[in-house]
Length: 484
Image (cartoon, rainbow, N blue to C red; front, side, top):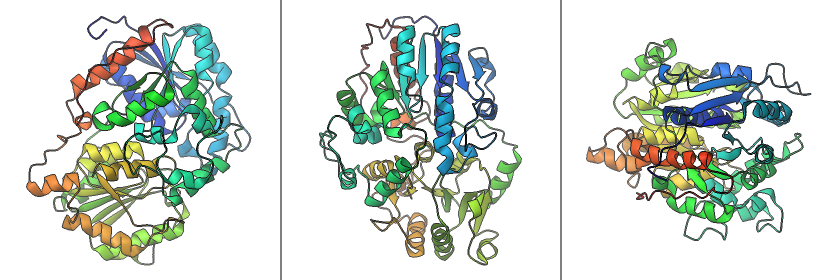
């Protein structure tokens, strides 16, 4: 199959209403379109309007279909993504997404695509596609280690005698992982995961949505690679009992406007800092922070005397310590409100480390740019991502109380200074940096290096073979890939 020509395919992509999902879907859409296939990208009007412009060479291969989001009680007017609502209202966004089911059915009936790639929230897509003779793939935007830890569809849904029945079971690797690993939640991670599960008025748990998405699709597509997670991908195929196609980590190759006003202001400050000295601090748009955490971070950064660039977003009503911004203003540090051009910031030579919540998109951007990762996790897969990165010597976590997740300004101070002093003897990036032979994105994990076109072509060939095959022939021979 590897060398066979594939007819041009018509593929629908339908992501969950969160930009941590929409963006990877959009990146994958562009990669598939580059191979000559035709993509219909389906989402709500506001979300589609927020996407970056298509490159001219792809404009004829990607079309957008806007499905207006139905009104749901308790969902604010004009809210169409998780960026538009506080965390406790995301459950109503899921309810509104479920109300789009019949609209999507009518669209699929009229467009008759070859395949649909869907997200966890729309767990009902698989059976609908099967009835219509359309191939379906659940695209998982988590990495393979996190999904393998979560287990089989039955285990994720908590049905058919699940192995794990109490919170403590999530703090150790599960029995279906056949190799030594430290990938598991800390107790404070479990508390955050349980809280999200309790806040659900959509009528369907996230576990059920995810488990049914896996169970009822033809193949699973995942944001991973053989080079980075070969052993975890093998576990997934075993516990899912169906093909799992890694499409790569989908790194960001920023081609945004170099003359953008926000970037020019940021760049001006970064240009005045010494190489590899700035700690870039950003926890995404959905981190469940509280006032005490914000205070400890601020005081720790101030005490460290390390240059920092802290993206605090819209602050969410948080107050910084009295006089903090005045004392750190100028060359010492920046507290940035609103959106920041993260890809450009991480690529700047003055940035020496990245303090992140451990969301996969941010992790990929940090590794891609060779930045040691300091991890402060809050929810979902982030704790599992942190353990995997620690195992691979790509990051380390802020010391925290095991039960409540609290941390102190002393810990923040110490960890910020470790980056400046390069006191991370086992960190992959700092070892390379000390030897003076680190070169941009040319890292050992080839799946995240620029120029891995051959590997990307292999991955997409699997997806092509799946989408063009008949219903009774979903088995695809995988290319052999050496693992780093």
